[in-house]
Length: 120
Image (cartoon, rainbow, N blue to C red; front, side):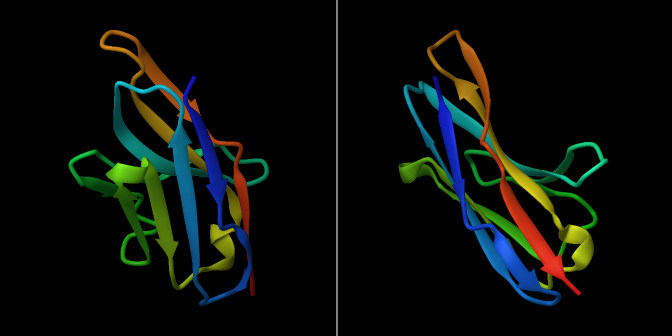
């Protein structure tokens, strides 16, 4: 089973920065797309950013120009650098990863979530 462990959340003032990290561990044949999603109270989980193993990225319009996703393939780790944070960025942030556990068995794993709170 592929496990994801997140770190880096916390409380920050509006305009501040935070960096989230997520490390994948367990038996994997390949680790393809890694990404970050967030879910605020009473709202659906939404995409924040994703990155492929080749470095291709995708961002939600609401975070473009403020957040940067990156990954260290050697360490199976994905990062989310968040800058110019706004109160509306307050959410639980979840790491996601998918790939192949074996040559034929897919996996799609989620982290436990890390709280990001931006005060005004």
